[in-house]
Amino acid sequence: MYPENVLSSLNDLIALRFQASSTFNKSYKKSSAIMSGSYSSPFRGRGVDFSEVRLYQPGDDVRSIDWRVTARTGKPHTKLFVEERERPVLFVVDCGASMQFGTQGAFKAVVASRVMALLAWTASKHGDRVGGFLFAGEEHEELKPVGGKRGILKFFNRLIERNRSQLETESTDEHTDFKDLLFRLKRVARPGSLVYFISDFNGLQTKHINLFSQLATHCDLALIHIYDSIERHAPPPGLYRISNGKEEGILNVDKASFPKMLEEQYNERVDILDTLRRQYGVHTFSVATTDNVQKVVRDNLTHKMINAL
Image (cartoon, rainbow, N blue to C red; front, top):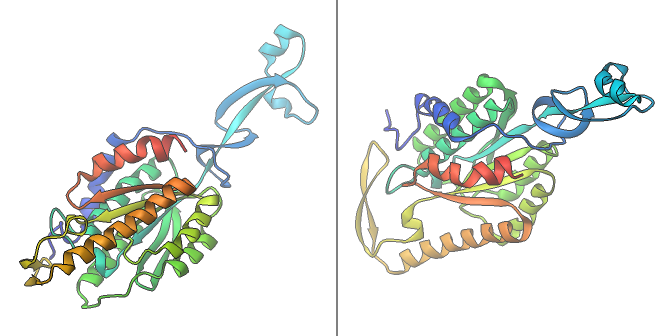
């Protein structure tokens, strides 16, 4: 059995339900989705939330006439309601080989799982359906959005299984083909969907900027960058003990060019994410493997993604 800083357990992810409840308050958002749920939409109808009273117009539902205002003014008035509609919340979670790594705190895959769990429980509280994609290299597994606890637990189980499978293989999969993944995601995500893309973005290149920006034009998109401190500030040359939770080995950093390469790759990814944020309004933030996940998610999403969008 792997320790929980190497592979998340189902109990660990379920326990985050209580943290999610204390982290986020219920909020509302205009949406163009077509199901019933907890986000207010621009559609007028017989919904849950009262909006306003206006003069009766031909074709209005007589059942919505406000008789008190009608009696007071002498003119027929009708009540309008804001119809509440559910939207799908899609999680695109990286389970690739580069995510099965961490020098401090936890593996990147574990941090990604915890971020996803906090946000999934929040979505469930709002009555939304949870689904998305699990991906590793060129492999993409789609999970259809399902409402309630059942949908979340299904996603958790598949996420844990994919990460365990990745740990137990010797695969060093190639960089993610973001092009194919984003084309598929764009076809699946309905306009107005909320998409959380959680990854270390290993292999992200400037040519992918246009694809992410296109997705952001019809979805609410958040890119959550998971990283390990060694990627941001690489260690000096030397011998370093490493482990996958079961076996140990030695990493020989014998060239000064190795730390420089790691930092350059990290900075390239951050620059691309920053471009998406500044030029295309995509919400982005980073979570380190040593961070307090609940605090980082709360500080970055409470207003920016959940309330302000």
